[in-house]
Length: 136
Image (tube, rainbow, N blue to C red; front, side, top):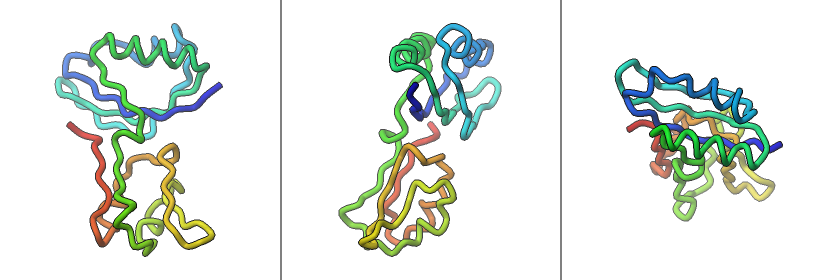
């Protein structure tokens, strides 16, 4: 079993389809919703942690994309300019998911698989080195 986090973007007309039901029932994928911004009749975004076999995850993602849902791994939607980082640690103070930590050499490390896209790191960084693409 593998766990993988994805940001899903839904078109406005997808609200009438039981997408999560099909992932669970047809592809045996466990779903953990970490963040959601979904409005009836409008586009929406979800941060999901999906758990299943590699094959089932691949099939489930393909099925979502065939239903006009954009699926991108979380690490493609979050950017951190680590070359300009001064390792001040401000962002670690607000990162309650543990995605941003200081290593034993007091250098900042980022683990996108722990990120829940709370976006608290964005205003915490004095150099504005974080960019998050969650919404349209």
